[in-house]
Structure formats: C-alpha cells, structure tokens
Image (cartoon, rainbow, N blue to C red; front, side, top):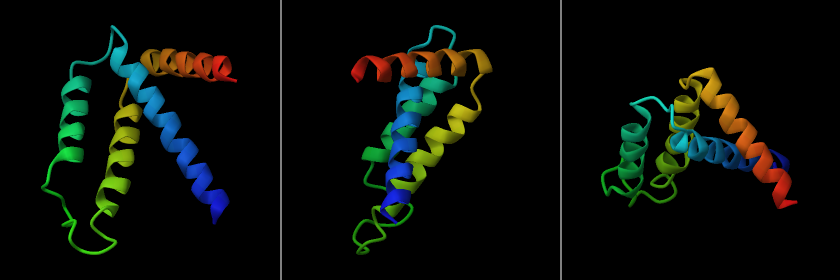
Length: 97
C-alpha cells in the first residue's frame, strides 16, 4: 500500500509542476488561467461537495477532486505547450539532484 501511495504522490507532484509551467507558458490557452483560479477558489472555499464536518470524508473531495481537475486540464492542453512544460519540469528535476 505504501508503494501505491508513494507512486500517487509522485504523480500528483509531477502534474502540479507541469500545471505550473503550463500556466506560465506564453501560448497558454485563454481558459487555463481562469480555470486555475476557479480551482484555487474551490480549494479555499468553505463550500464543498462533502461537508468538512463529516469525519474523514470532508477532506476527501479536496484530496481527490483537485488532482483530478489538474490532470483533466493538462489533458486538454495543446501538445506543444505540454511538451515544453514537460521539458522544463524535467530540466528542473535534473538540476535538483
């Protein structure tokens, strides 16, 4: 189970890094920044799909829906932006070692 959690965490971090570089790309689609802002508002909003006072389930919607939304937006990016974001993310991880 720990291996699966570690792999999932790695995937979420990679998608987050790709999303960050795609947001900063000069040719990013017009919908990307408002979508990212909406996702940020959802993350900090007190209104959730599952209320937070329900023990254990309240945070699940944030933990599951936000990474899924980021992954969905990355899939909708033009290929050249995604490739350049992957190249920048790969160059960043190489420098960090």
